[in-house]
Image (cartoon, rainbow, N blue to C red; front, side, top):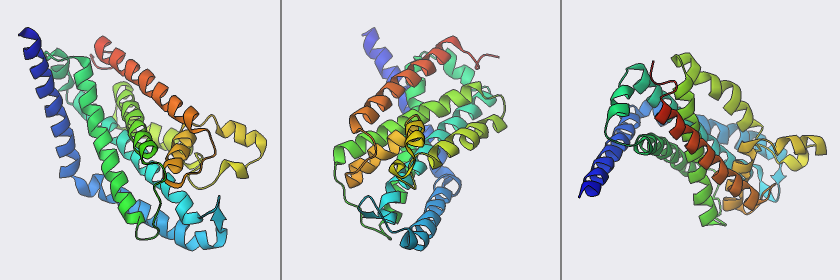
Amino acid sequence: MMNRICLRISLVALWTIIFREVRRFLRIWPQTLLPPAITMLLYFVIFGRLMGRRIGDMEGFSYIEYIVPGLIMMSVITNAYNNVASSFFSTKFHRSVEELLVAPVSAHVILCGFVTGGVLRGLAVGLIVSLLSRLFVQLPLSHPGITLLVILLTAVIFSLGGFINAVFARNFDDISIVPTFILTPLTYLGGVFYSISLLPAFWQAISLGNPVLHMVNAFRYGLLGISDIQIGVAVSFMLLACLLLYGWSIYLLNTGKGLRQ
């Protein structure tokens, strides 16, 4: 009986956090959903239509077909990360995180609630960008299972990353440091706009250390059926990253590091 009550409390708490997170980014959709859609639309026009005609084919596909999977992943990465980072830091900044920590729910419930909100925002923007891409190109779906798995794992990884950033951030400026100086370079150098086969051998080896490269190529494989890396390695890496980041996040919640001032 007690276990059923605890389970019901946990489910109510989880649903409440998820509902709040979704309502939050839907309420301010001109700030959360519209800007990334406009940005990606500009990428499609400039890089796909205008520059793509001069670049020509890439790995047997037109240039715009080649970059669309990377642009979709870019939007998912950025929005999943930003949603959790800004939301959880706001919760910490307003001291309402203390209410969560003393509530009769586990750290797993709290973390899953915030991460699910980030995943849903990332997927929502990814879907919008995918629909916009159909105005320019009709992409195949070579491996639906791989496509869904990769985009979900990517959204979870960067939602967890946003959570960890929010825990250690001391002010709102700290939230923008990681996206500006880490995520953006990794994304632009992660094979979104080019194949690493174009690089010299030395830089190809260096590029393999970029985690975003594995995610973008795995997603491109799901859609187009081509990749610069082994899909098994990419998926294994993403699963391991999820486990490590999740474990670290739970540790931070349980110990209160960066949360209890």
